[in-house]
Amino acid sequence: MEIKDVGMAGTLESSDIMISIEKNEGKGIEIELKSTVESQFGSQIRKVIKETLEKMGVTNVFVRANDKGALDCTIQARVEAAASRATQAGFKPWEVE
Image (cartoon, helix red, strand yellow):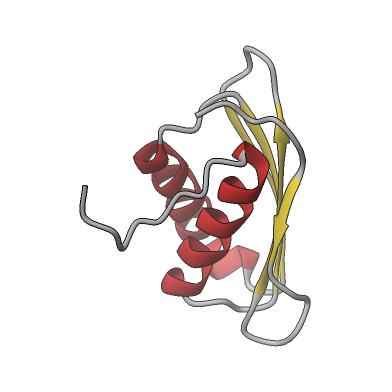
């Protein structure tokens, strides 16, 4: 999937994560993470973001993530929403093809 615009999803409320996705021509997936729990869960947060993007077929993307203690399922949902908005593809993982 090709990134066409900046996509954002999430909030800065407790137990949520704000995700911003934009083009990153030829540089793969880069993640800038700010988190209140980075020392404990930073590697897991990055893993969930990366795996979600790979599952969607999104490459060459720069992700800014501002985490306030979100669970993995919330991180995944926010990444999917932001990527869908950025690609303008309307990705719906719950639909059967």
